[in-house]
Image 1 (cartoon, one colour):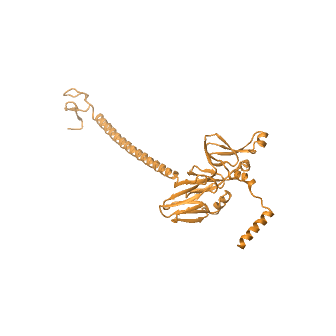
Image 2 (cartoon, helix red, strand yellow):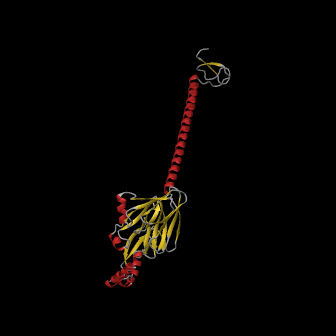
Image 3 (cartoon, one colour):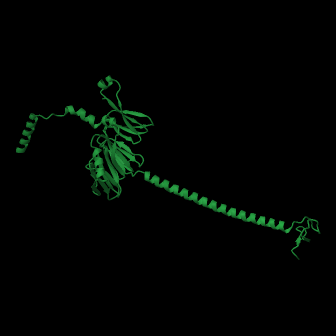
Length: 332
């Protein structure tokens, strides 16, 4: 058989190239070129389809892997962020009514920070370390914010440790959970104690009017970090959650704490009669939300003003009488 022969696809009979119809059955005959082209086209199409399918499968697999990796990364990041935002809590109980104290039950390794001299009593399995807790900068920061220069760090050595801190003035002790993005601003000398993740620094009132007339001065305390902090309150306390733009008018000295999201300003009492006869002074403190604000019922400054007229005034006669009593006691 030579290369000039082709076979009928219908009956299989040999035919010469160039025949359009089969000599045996009369069926139409396609030449080799057409057959080859069709076969090549089919092979090319199959090859391209297989390659495309393979590439698509690989792309899908890569996309799925990327999606899984992104999902896992996001889950890990969210978990880590949530863990960082969880305050370092402590088991505590506040007792004492109007002369309050807080008792903290510590596990082994837990630490409590406080200003020097604040501790009332503790079990003997708690160690104490006096430190600047941040260097010279922190020392001066605490000095300007009304705290003592150094802090005491108490560390529990067992799971049954306990330590107590007492308020320095009749009133209340308020626990606050502080998170990294939720700082709070407090009056000077408000800090009593806190977990090891708490940082006490200064908050500077940039407005001159607020610093001079708001009753809190230019320097307040900023509580930041991650943990639980306990602050002192003069008298009883009242909490208020302010909406964005909502304002609270507070008399001088009655502000205890506000969220860092709040704004502080002053407002002049309107009307000469109200200023001179109202007994509320010339200025009031204005706190604007959003955020929480806490007020106190008996600021220590007002208590001192009430008690001042009843304080004995030293005189030469009183001094001589006291000297005579001391001399009599010395002779016995």
